[in-house]
Length: 468
Image 1 (cartoon, rainbow, N blue to C red):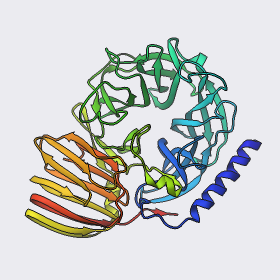
Image 2: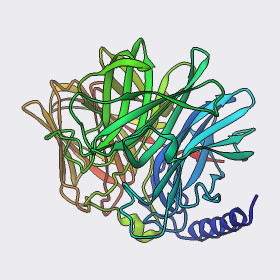
Image 3: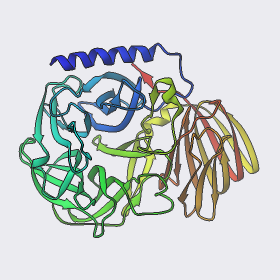
Image 4: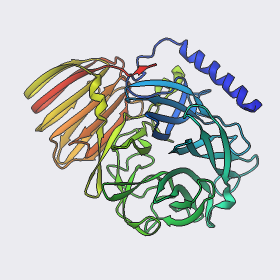
């Protein structure tokens, strides 16, 4: 441990103690992971290691508006009871001193290997796109998933292929066919977003073997790539900046979605059409991992550079992660279902059948399941979901802090599953074929719920996560 890391640990402890001393915030989610204080963004290093789920995340404890990034850390055995662990990665080395940026985890018998981007911004008159920035690929090793053993610089800008800007980041690493593979998002000198594919025999020395790109440029930068196979089909999950799409799925400042792959990612692969992954206001930089039986996804319930805001920043913290979602392949598309463990949070159930209008009272945490192809509207009192002419429209009348309307195509709506948690809403349509995620800040967390149309609904109260 160097002197800088010692001081950063002390300062983080002071910031977290000051946050813990504040009165409870009614906008703090109960069953979503949020930072103890300060700022949270991308989920990092998601994995199932030695019988425990590990969720790392980009963490700036000193300011709710962001700043130098560390890796915060939660772990759990069941996705319901969580332990807040010490910060795993500080920005404390010459190769990551301006931020331990996003990355991934590789589970091995001897420990947990964490790959991430070490950010460097040189002093001077630079644009920090083509000049002035170092995006280093760094490896950190942990013997137990909680304590840090060592860090090692693997690649600097000069080690990446020619023709790129300084923006190469967010390594995702996995083992396959006896070798190791890594993908990283990049921005070319022609302002084209691509994904670089690397191969290694030893986890340390990497060689570039392929570049994944679309036939025509699709945005100028692809962030947070995740390449995985599900039931025989490969998918490339990315958050493209500058995506050329319009309409539903492209109404945010940046898009988020996936390309189905045809062929071998190591050479000759072709990317299919881009599919938006979430149609709400707040969803970005998702990552997936396998726990041995299924592929799970967690995303950042936020959006960089958005023109809407979160009032919790005035209370010393900002942002949260989505609930864990199980991925299901449906042809060349992906559906997202809430992780089955969340059903254990249910407490009590109110059942309604309506032909016209029905109302219900809900608390600050609830799951709302609506069934029936003739449901026209579900109104939470300031946030409404309306189905008409093949579109699901999310409208926020109050408490949106700049959020107003988002739309999603829906061929037919047989089921709606709505998760409401103090200041966050996640909507799953038809078993997760379509998903909308948003933050929402009503004056009072308890809501009056209104159904319109013809159908049936069950409203469950939900318990919060337990923190050990």
